[in-house]
Length: 240
Length: 233
Image (tube, rainbow over all chains, first blue to last red):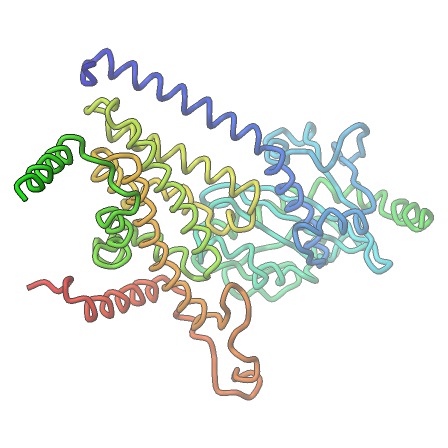
């Protein structure tokens, strides 16, 4: 057999591609459930870490059950039925117009206090960035925040998932003195007021991405929380 | 006497004729395993695969996982290419090798994501970059294409171990001096640290890529000082 004939070369290449594609998709399909579990656990882990609960990934589902009392989905600042908050793909939702966007909200209770956890999703320099920010019962003060990214530059933009950056958000405020939503300014140096945090040197675009992400993702929740936070609190405390 | 000689000659002829089976670990085959560990080390002698040696040697554990992944890809890649060596059309052989390596790496990546998720996050892009690890393509092209399956397997294992021990040696020093831990366990006593009134502090520079290069350099230096075969005229 002449292995250098053109027809053979084409045949070989075609067969190779088919075999490789089939075997890889077989493996990928079979491992999918394991990978999905990992991602789910990681999501729970970061949701918990936004209310300052650090757990191992494998422990996350258990802790999630304990602390997260309620998960609801909002559309146009009203709760909608029949949606599973946890499985909503925020990356898709943020591309929809405001009135169609589904926004998950987690309500956590820790040591007798109620916290509202808002998922965030936005764009960094190289790819998506996301995170969770938790608000105290006053719907204004940040209790904790956690961020992550897909492909930001290590040492620069990638620093948004370090405690040094995340811890700055604790105690910051989202509403101005008239109680209208202003978000948090991720600044280039000199962050002094309760509405500002220091950005990352060399990671300006990622820092701006965090700021824009907070503005964009949190604003829809504010009217809802203003209206219903009292009711949520009583409801949760009654079920205790 | 002449009788015996004749028989011997006959036997010799037979030997040449039939090329009797080499023992599995003959001297030649052992050389395939041993050579890459020292005399022909892919990192310190051939200076291949440096990129990953710099990137994932901050801690021992990722270095170990990377080594195991490379071991798998290298051994399996060598075996597969060697099995196909008589069927691969010459003109697309590099593409075929690339496809073999890339699909093995995709496989490793999927397995890591499923079973050691945290490590796979830490290795992130470097698993994908195994594809571009020149050691692997180098061995496929230079060895597996022209040798039998068993020899190619040994060659793959040998080179992967040659890669692995350098990786682990570099990671050992970087983790020990940079973080005071080994495999994540504290080995430098707490009381030694300046913060606790001691005299010691971790060297943060060890965690940065330049120190990986310098550590590899020191290993090459020590190796060349001890192994006279490597000293060029």
